[in-house]
Length: 138
Image (cartoon, rainbow, N blue to C red; front, side):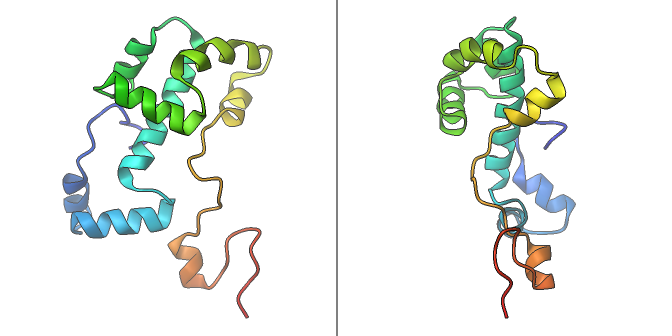
């Protein structure tokens, strides 16, 4: 999903590839990553959209389709939910905020976070460790 974010999401095909049902894959994915496969994919798409909008050479509609979204309305709604402003407002503001900052730093600083919580991974649960910043169970 990280590499092919612009492709349609086929949870059934992903599940077949790892010999799981789609429901089981979705539950395990959410446990590991803190969001559903679709939510994760949309976060990656919005991250890429943020980078494209910052460049300023594409319209919001062109960015929407470039990141794999087929509906401008859905794209704008998800972008606004995740980033806190519309794609157009972000485009206007992004150039000023990242001026003079190396692109690798700007990408990290502007990365959207759906949930501000530290995800509790299955590996940490199995190992009996709490997420960073949380007390260990006695």
